[in-house]
View 1 (tube, rainbow, N blue to C red):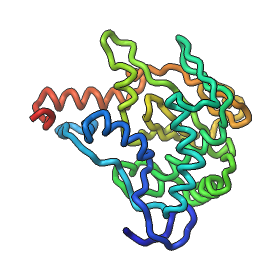
View 2: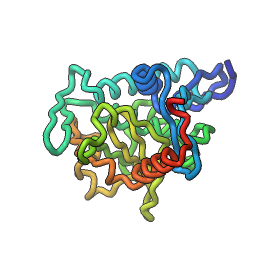
View 3: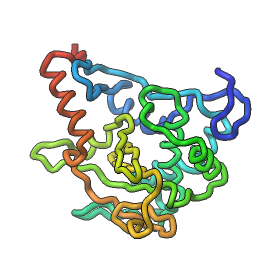
View 4: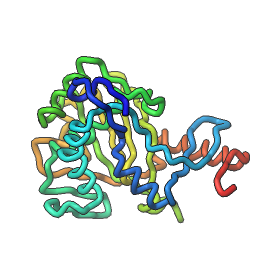
Length: 258
């Protein structure tokens, strides 16, 4: 076990195998696929192959791993999986509404993933960067269980869907995990994550006041959020990934079922 400075508490301790995207999500994926997953990239001439890599890095000490898990991960993953008894979940033709929830916990959970990606040295998270002052402010909020100010970070949640005939099922969409996607809007930027069948877009700096009541924005002053359906073919980065992966498959660059 490596010893180093924990990224969260800043003390010198043995470091755990820390997961940016929670290990519980990878475990479910691997369990459904006999201990491995299919991986491919949006790069031409890349190979499609099996992998059991869960993208871990030596980031946190045991106490801080436990802190994030108990305070944010267990609650939020149960919520997204519709197994949190205290929450009300209503599905409609437009999306999914989560009510009677702790939006601060959900916000901090999603932001913690971005923060962990930013402090990680893994190539898969190389697109995620935070200025040191913002990184420290978010770290302090995670330690203090304090909501991150809306002017710094904004989070939008959507439910993935596929409207094409014989398209991807919801179970298949729940199995999608991709490396973070980066978007530049000029005045601000965002990092996007896919997990548990949801699309999360994290805006840095945050969302302007007049936009904080838009559909999908997690407002920590409320106890509910609506995740509208978002078609996977309305996500340009994901379309590129699918098209390139299919092209590599057609060209024979696949180690699947060999």
